Image (cartoon, rainbow, N blue to C red; front, side, top):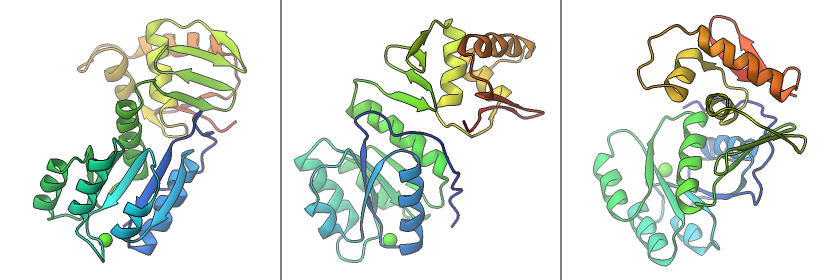
Length: 231
Ligand code: CA
């Protein structure tokens, strides 16, 4: 299995969230720990259900259901009984019954192997929004994007953006370094089925660059889309 691990300049979110990785496959566990650490999370790793239950409360548990000592579904149920921790279960293909059982046992979401790091990080952000409704702050270099208050600042200087400009920036800041296609941005910031001219996007991106005033922050990837550059 491959997890594309991308070097990231992303700094940990404030009050950085902790993730407990419960995974007995050493190769996969190594990639997960590395990827999540680079994503700004505090990561702990255990290989058994017993150890998972012995840990003090993380914010998110990434729980492989195929564990060597105990049934992952039982681990899920026991975790849920004692806390509101966010639980994302991980299953191999063909384990649909286990996945359904785990959701019934209180899991918040599931991922089927193989999955990409970007997808994992997105799922974690989603479950964190649920367990920490205080919102989330995305950071990249001097840029701070508060998703709850929709406030943006650069090196502490608040920048007033229009709603469209904010939506575009949110798309990019959600995963710095990843190329976000023009279509993806249009669908997210305008409408689920945008088929109009895309020049409107360039106009907004130009305004966004001017307001943020950080050279190299928003890169154009010709023929593909935009991304936040390494700073
Ligand atoms: Ca396993």
